[in-house]
Image (cartoon, rainbow, N blue to C red; front, side, top):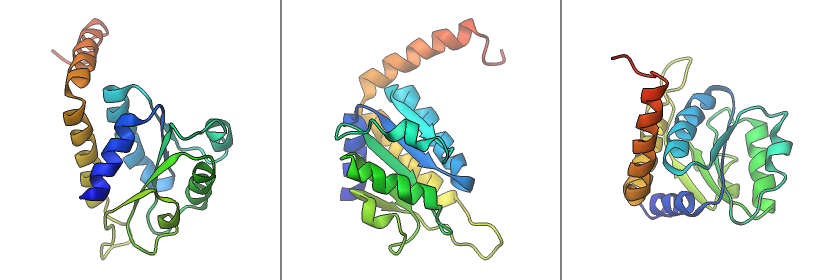
Length: 164
């Protein structure tokens, strides 16, 4: 629970939030980016390993990187996390196992199992963890979040986003 609380605090205090997710973990990263950006307006998903250097070269101690990697761990996510740590950014590692190569780079590491007796892994637990993070960030930034959502609601109406 202490790691979870610390992760929420890092997210709330971050100047910029970069989410690094590749391959199948991109789906989790997209979900996380969408809601953190709605709440805080400072989240960006980096999913192209070839453009990562242009996104991360200005990282500093005021930024947070949320790295998502599960077995079979993507090399670009691990390398980007190492780079971000060298730049002084806070790293929230979300992974599946204590032996994950992402663990040494995390200032905070959150674990969610993905193993399943199938040819694909299950992202039910990681998605639940991400949902809990988003919910707690929203709860802790309630007045700002309500203002953002109210403003967004007006914008959605203007652009006829939802079926009526």
